[in-house]
Length: 189
Figure 1 (cartoon, one colour):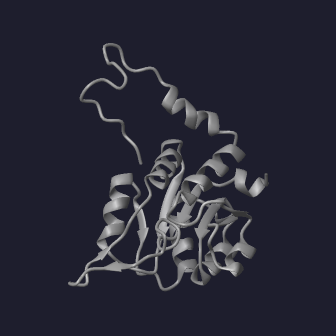
Figure 2 (cartoon, rainbow, N blue to C red):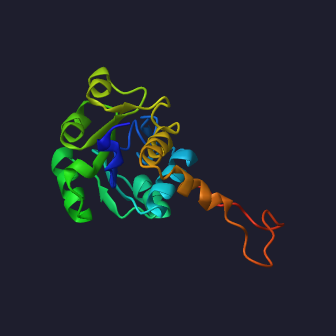
């Protein structure tokens, strides 16, 4: 494991091909829909719950991404990005994190400038060959299929914080509350 991964405090993510499988679905009225993986949502939630920051930088603009990020409590969204490196620097500045402490997860050529500038570049399994070559870590999962969750676990394990993540789920229920009781719905990403 590299010292660069151990230093990461800000996780920056692309959307299409990273948080989704890259499909752009449009209905007859031109409304865009996206499919997000719950495992990726859990990974983002774990990262945030353990004190990490998250920013999303995407070349497309749309409400589907905004709605999903609001559900996950992600405050930093750079949509309609024409310069991901510029937006990466803006996100790092907004979070008070040096570029050396930023991981960027990408999948295609527009992500390369941000990946080359951050401290820990990550590529999803089905990323372009040039993106995989620029990455310090390549996920086994493809984009939109748990790759972000895998990247988060990799970072937390590298930082010796995976047991902290597991401890969240080992916590005993509050007195008088039965775990998994009738009417209770487990929360997930």
